[in-house]
Amino acid sequence: MTGRERVRRLLDREPVDRVPVLASLIAAAAEMRGIPQRLIHQDAHVNADTLLGVCRELGLDGAYISSDNWIVHSALGGEVVFPEDDEPMGRRPVIDEWDKLEGLAVPDPESAPRMRFMLDAARHAVELNHGELFLEANMDSGAFQMAGILRGAERLMLDVALEPQRVHRLLGFCTEVAAAYGAAMARTGVDAVQFGDSTASLVSLEMYEEFVRPYQPPVIKAIRDGGAYPFLHVCGNSNHLSALLAASGAACVEIDGPADLHKTVEVVGDRAAVRGNVPTMLLRNGTVEQVERRARDCLQAAGPRRFILSPGCGVPRGTPPVNIRALVRVAREHGTVR
Image (cartoon, rainbow, N blue to C red; front, side, top):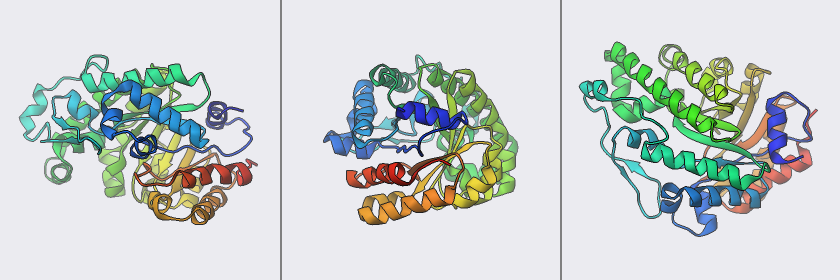
């Protein structure tokens, strides 16, 4: 069974031979290849070659095709700085004044430069893959996180309290952008498209219900209609949101290290697969034995549910490759699906 078959069968509720293992490698992949990060963020072929090649060498079941969270910021006219060997960084928020929202239009993903760059990377990964690995491509952000990037995260939190109607207008626009980009990414032929409402774990359940949840279904539908599985990623402690994540319609819910995996899989049930959640700092700084122990704990917490073993978030630079291989080894030895 190839990695692609294994993950797709799991998502389709079909029998698999073992728990799959995925990992989001960008900075770590550049380091393992000995190349500056700038190349991954600016050259579509280097992006796909590096991310796919490293994941294959580590024995993972899939590859994560991504760059950074400033793609939409750039597509809407924001400035992005590219350090030689670090992550890109956006400059001034695009919507630092509310009247600027009225002058924005939903960009065409095939012509907006950095969106086109990511679509080209995804298409190149599909060509190189030959159906071997499960390809999960990132499409930047869901509506709420995108609003925080375009408006500024701290400013958005104030707006939620002081100007909620304006926030809803912004979220409506962000949903249109995310749906257009997600659909375009799905049409590249990748297996899954991930979007993050990563900052949503910072808000209360009530705020999530009003400002996050209503804007996810159109994005999820656009990804499904484009032919890919929608994956939803939330950073931090998402325990209070488990039921809403389960009801989102995503094929897979990705949780971070601080979240309670056992609680999440119990609440999600069979409505979606769950991916997680070995802490990334443990992967970077821990011993192989510590990583193996935590991976076994994850398998035990997930039990018989549909589960993908993974780091909780993006693997940081400085992570020893042997610690990623330890996840694969644990899944092969102990990840029997009952």
